[in-house]
Length: 372
Ligand code: SAH
Ligand code: SF4
Image: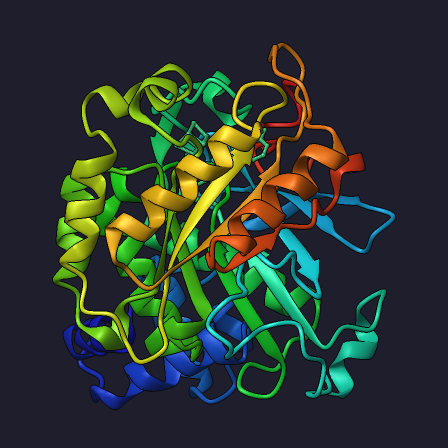
């Protein structure tokens, strides 16, 4: 619930509406997890709220996996008691996946607040990778999450709650410390559109994170992109498209969804978005050794991106291996040749650093750990 819904709830209890704002402050800013501890409310009111069966709270970090590179991967549970879990990743210094429009690139001029001492490593900016569904129905051939199938959608509270839980763990002061959000965890955000956008609105309005610090990645769900184009700029994150192939033949092979919405249809939908000043569309491109990492693919990607006429950049991701997936990681030389080829064609290109590979936290490796 946002402040407005909490206010309506308070009014129904015979309380003044502004109590709702106090509740929102407590839940999203002070990150309090129990009604009894919301001391801005009179004790009697706290008791009344609890006795009417209301609870405040958020998903619980049930397990922590720490990478040697400072990345932390969390197994996040509930609060729904169905036992299903998702994964959320904390990346101090980010992975360049959020880079590109000049506002939040790798410069390290802003110091983290005193609270940063609470986390294990110093960081000047951090990125949280957020899940939108338990599993995924899209079935991209190179992705470990696809192996789970879709188990269920996350609620708005479960999506925003992952962020609040991680902010609290690291003592992040929103507005002071620099945090970026990438909706690139488990699931396809645009196949859980309502809840995903409701979570974005909670994160903007109640948690206080700018949508320009958020990037949502989609495999190319055209109706979702069209709806997204209609969102007001104050609640619209930046957009990344998982392109992953230089033509429809290869893309249909590795991403079956391409048979429904081929590259041209995706690009047309993206054209409907009114971009902000300096904003660019990101095209993510997973390099599969021998399959998508050859020089002719780079030339084709450069042509394709230029032909869109969109302000765009390409984010290269070397494929991260997973059990039971028969692709191979690209040779470092192939990656470098690919990057240079795009760059030489005038296409802005970034190489995403694999974060937390040793703990299966890198792109496409998020899968319920108790299974894998
Ligand atoms: N479902 C959304 C967002 C989550 S996936 C989407 O597909 O866009 C986030 C990114 O990780 C996507 O660009 C996807 O192509 C990439 N990815 C998936 N599996 C990967 C793997 N094994 N190695 C590297 N990147 C991978
Ligand atoms: Fe789903 Fe994205 Fe994985 Fe494709 S890459 S299966 S859309 S999570």
